[in-house]
Structures are given as C-alpha cells and as structure tokens.
Image (tube, rainbow over the protein chains, first blue to last red):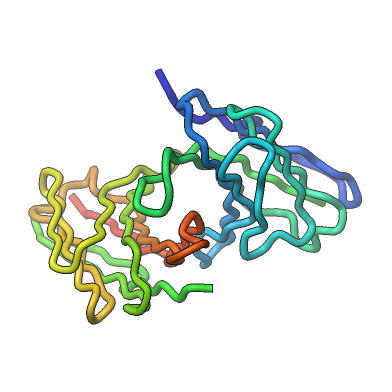
Length: 113
Length: 114
C-alpha cells in the first residue's frame, strides 16, 4: 500500500541535542511538507519541498533544517537553536500545488527535556 | 500568513443529530479550500478540496459548500454517528507563487455522544 511513513512515533531528547525526524513516502509525490502542531494551535508549516534538491521555508522555519536528496525522503532536523522543540510533527506529501489534497503520515511526538 | 478561522472550537452532539461548522478565509486571491478529518491516533485524511464559488461536495453523510466571494465554507454532517467524532480541519493555500503553502485553521473538535 502506498503511504507516508514517519519514524519514530515517539522521540525523547535532552536539551541541546539535535534530532532528526524521518519521513518517507512511496506515493511518487513531488511535494513534501513538515508541519508542527501545538495544543490549541492549527498545523503550522515548517518547511516544504516542491521537488528534489529544492526546499522552502514555511512560517516557522527558525531552528529547523531539512534536506531533499531523494524524491521519497524529506528528513527534518530539529536543532538546538529551536527554542520550543517539544511538539507533534506531521509530514505530508501531495502530487500537485494547492488544489491537490495532502496525504499525511502518522506523526512523531518529540519531547525535549 | 493567511488567516484561516474555524468555529466553533468544539462541539458535542447526540447521535443522530445533524450538525455544521464554519471555516472562514480571506476572499481575495482565493485559490482553493481543503477540509480534512483527523481522528485520534490516526493521520489527517482529506475530505474535500474545493476551488469554485458555489461548489458543493458530498461524501456519504458529509457535505461541504464554498462561498469564495464572502470567504467562508460550511461542513455539514447529517445524522451524526460516534465514528464521526474527530477534529475537522480546513486549510487554504496562498495564491500565486506560494500556492504550495497551506495555512490551516485550528480545527473544530466534534464529539458525538451515543
């Protein structure tokens, strides 16, 4: 079955450590996204990539970095510069621009203490 | 950043009741309006993507309407069932060069009481 796989489901890190969240898709989608969810907030866009080797900052990119070396993969690194990294992170993909639906992974809950 | 608002924030209905909730968005430079259902412990699932003013879409007991001139969309659920309990999200992309960027509302959390 085609889909998006995020791993791990839960991640715990000490403050000051960088951590990388994995996102893999086998839907052959060009565009991939990272969103963050905090209690009482909507999904907020961190980074997105329209095509391999290209990515753009979203609304809250500070303290995060991404890469897009392969079409299937869009890993997100949460760096020590991110002031409030504890959150639920969702990866998504789509086969077109804004009129095409997003397909989401199951998310990674990151806790930094 | 686009301002997408949803109301109400949460809603409790009895099984069998019909219900509706609202998504409002800027009417200028409209491109598309998305609705998603997000059940607990699952990933958000697309319900509808609408692009034309006056558009109506239906999926089983769920339907949606779109008014791009006044900047709102309604989601209707007819005869609510416990399995409809979920958070319903709407989202709209920036138009033009930024149309890959979807802005989400905070969602409406629906609880259907058996």
